[in-house]
Amino acid sequence: MTAGPAARDVILVGGGHTHVQVMTAFAAAARAGRPWADARLTLVSRDRDTPYSGMLPGHVAGLYRRDDIHIDLEGLAARTGARFVRGAATGLDRAGRRLVVEGSAPIEYDIASFDVGITPDLSAIDGAEAHGIAVKPIGRFLEKLADLRAAVASPDGGRRVLVVGGGPAGVELAFSLRERLRADLAAAGLEPGGLQVAIVTSGTILKGLNDGVRRRIHGALKARGIAVLEDRRIAAVSAEGVTTDAGERIPADAVVISTKARAPSFLERLGLPTARDGTLLTRFTLQTLTDPAVFAVGDCATVANEPTEKAGVFAVRQGPVLADNLRRALAGEPLRPYRAQTDWLVLMTTGDGHAIGGRGDRIAVGGRWVWWWKDRIDRRFMRRFAG
Ligand SMILES: Cc1cc2nc3c(=O)[nH]c(=O)nc-3n(C[C@H](O)[C@H](O)[C@H](O)COP(=O)(O)OP(=O)(O)OC[C@H]3O[C@@H](n4cnc5c(N)ncnc54)[C@H](O)[C@@H]3O)c2cc1C
Image 1 (spheres, rainbow, N blue to C red):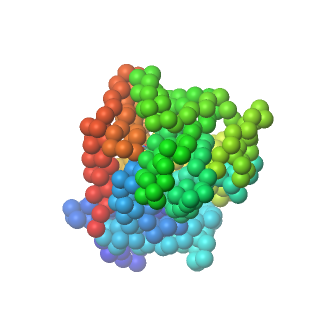
Image 2: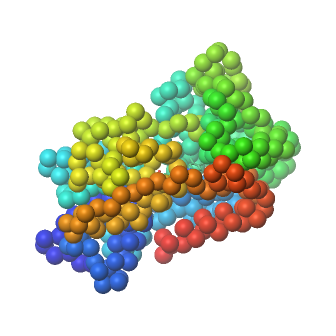
Image 3: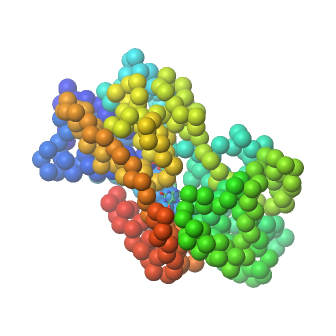
């Protein structure tokens, strides 16, 4: 694993779901006596640890501790023989092959790969930055969640919580917030029934999922008194609630935003082709369209000929392919294509030890065993990165 003077620098920008797998693959190859040719691996990350989004709703509901849902990136780097640089990447000098990192000297690279995720596009909603609670970056969301919990559980706190966005993340958060905030109210000796949680969304909730899953989710939301307001596009957020683009006002004391997201804006300034949402366009090999030395994966990338939804399942599946392609690129071998799966398992927690999910057009399941199953899958994924 030690790199000689001729080492080539592979820089992983962002410790997202794909890059953490590259790090473990790099270490596994070295352990197996097949180290990547002359490679030195560096992870550049804005944060010291990274949350696993699949377990975030469970953490919000109080079912997991903070440490259960975070991968310690610095520790992982130390264990896998990678260098760790803490800092936010802000640009790329492609002619000079240097990554620009806030607060640190530029970092030279032979190959760079981006896995920096996306965040809800607050610019599309007036007042969202000042009055909304965006679900990403997750670190900031968790700080604001602590404030929200304290406010709700105070004797004269506002108790109307509105989640904007009807995708799986928004729906899971509505369930999970309800569980946690009701528990907080009960612990404070206040009436949990005073809490109101609602979801508001343009179109319908869970658009991409099959009818059986949607029916089960609607039933579960109804049983828990979570209102669903569909066909409403939110144009503005204020301290009093939200206003739709048709002028309807929906009162709320807290507004959680889990809407369509955009890539970090610096990606659009790299001189590389991007999609409409600012994500880097790639080939099937996960290389950007015009620069074979720059790869992009996870939510911040879009495979040009096969765009998919933004979901962690794709970022996870890209891990082994990216690791193999970085190794192949270093060895001068042809790269292999990544092809996204056409249907995938979706498991959503209701925050109370049950889950609902399904796959493809038909399969829909729900119950306590589904939560047990989801928990097992998620914990198994996290164990791969534990110290
Ligand atoms: C509440 C919620 C629940 C979800 N549940 C699921 C689910 O059950 N299943 C599913 O498939 N998907 C789920 N998703 C979607 C999932 O979050 C994303 O698809 C997934 O996190 C994408 O992983 P990623 O590797 O692209 O990036 P991320 O996991 O977002 O990681 C990006 C990393 O890059 C770092 N970073 C960011 N900017 C910079 C920078 N400039 N320089 C350096 N580092 C940087 C960040 O610190 C972070 O560590 C959920 C999302 C939410 C919000």
